[in-house]
Length: 96
Image (cartoon, rainbow, N blue to C red; front, side, top):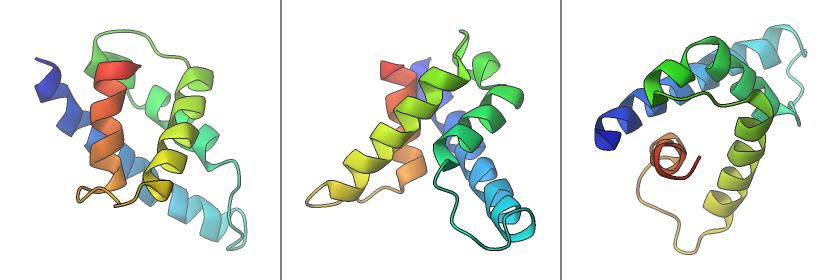
């Protein structure tokens, strides 16, 4: 059952990425958003991550998790073959 949730979470993370890119371009004038994990987390919570996971998750916990996951992904040597959204989605399902 958890394996079925990871693709849905990955899709939600990719949707957040697309929406966030628009936010950076339009609302922030193209400036890199240092607070992107909070933005992604809020988006995911508002767009049903709790329904996908079958449990509640707070924006604060998810933002912290996303930031840590990205830092680990970016510093991995060798870097995982899968995209960040897929790796992180699996971690969210199993660890968060």
